[in-house]
Image (cartoon, rainbow, N blue to C red; front, side, top):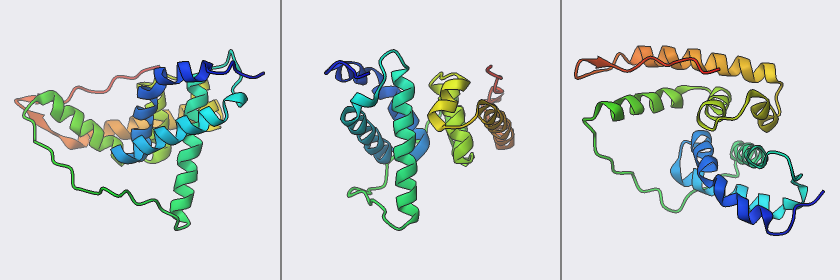
Length: 179
C-alpha cells in the first residue's frame, strides 16, 4: 500500500522533537543530531511510498534514523567522516540550581553508557516506545531489548550512586524502575 501524497508531510512535523531527542542521544552532539534529523526526514519523504498506512509512523521514523546513524558510524570507521564547518567551543554558565546539577549528573552518566544500552534506554524511557516497538526499530528480539534496558538501568544506577554529588544537603533522587 502507498501513502496518500502529502500525508507524511502533514504528520512528519509532529515527530521532529522526538526524532531530535533520539538523535541527540545517539550522537551526543547538537550539530550532529540536527544533521541526523534532517537526513532522516529527507529519507522518509523520499521513501514515503514504503510506509504502510495504519502502522506506527513514529517507529518507522526511528528505524530510519537508527539505520542512518549506523551508516554514518560505519563511514566514520572506514575513514569517510563528515567534519562540521563550525566547531567553535560551546560557552556555558555553571548553574547553582539543584535540578540542573542532577540533570547534568544524569546526562554525564548516560554519556558513559554503551551505545547499545543508551539507545534502548532513550527509546523506552524518553520516547515512550514499547519494548516491541524498540525491538522493531533496532531490529532486535524483544528479550534482547529487555536485557539491554535492565543492564542500562543498573549501570546508570551505579554511575549515579558513584557521583556522590550532594548539593545543599540533598542527594540526587534515586531512579525508579519503569515497566
